Amino acid sequence: MILTVTMNPSIDIAYQLDELRIDHAVRAKETIRTPGGKGLNVTRVLHTLHEDVCAAGLIGGNNGGFIKDRLKEAGIRFAFTEIKGETRCCIALLHEGKQTEVLEPGPEADASEYREFLKQFYALSKDSACITISGSLPAGIPDHCYADLISAAAINGVPVVLDCSGNALKKALAVDHKPYAIKPNTDELAELLGRQVTNDTSSLKAALLSPLFDGIHWIIVSLGKDGCFAKHDNTFYQVRVPQIHAMSPVGSGDSMVAGIASALVRNMNDEGLLKHANTLGMLNAMQKQTGCVNLKDYDALYQLIEIRKA
Image (cartoon, rainbow, N blue to C red; front, side, top):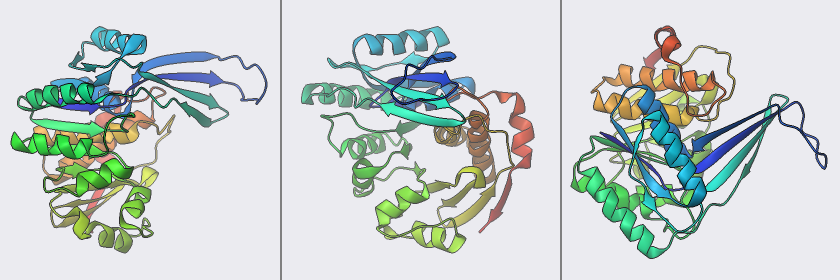
């Protein structure tokens, strides 16, 4: 089983507009509501891949009920920890080829709810072959949460794919037990290292050789339309992807995380893991809905990805 963790899920509401006019009433052409949060995007893609997946995290209120109902309808298993607060909504206004987002802060969880989640997580991790942890932390949850989860997973020998930023990421990298894989972008690398990091190969190599990342087996740096740069133990890879007609890049990183986890449980080699993850990222970008892939183009895109040692 692959366990996905979403500590701050949401209902993602996308409004398709002809134009966005400030201080005017604007009618939406289309409205799409989906269970959201980075970890639930990962969950949907894994389910599409027919992986055995279970979604965990914090959830509450009527919005939490909506998310559970939608996951049930899709046949996706979940084991959320209930909290008293109301799960947030995140609104995307799609207009003139642009996207404006309004993100609610989310609920505040208390210490007893956090303890209950940790207990549930530890039990679930015993049955997991891989764990993904994605996104932000809600108010009330300590910055060392992800470090705690990675340490708990390590007790059971379960690899963790971590996709987060800010203090939660810094704390997760500062403890003895490291995530198995991380997927930062260049801005997140720069924040961690306190220096500029560019897409240049020498800059990326120097960044990934930092002692901060010692003990992390896979570091995959997403470079958007330019593919990614990766380090697996002592080997570096440059990955180039074909041009595609992208509808929305939102959720492509989450689809890559799903691909990494899927590749790990399937014991893919390095080339297979990188091609699998990048193909899923591109497939997501070709869809309107976040965290959604159509596998009919999988083989064609997979064959067009170029990988070389760097």
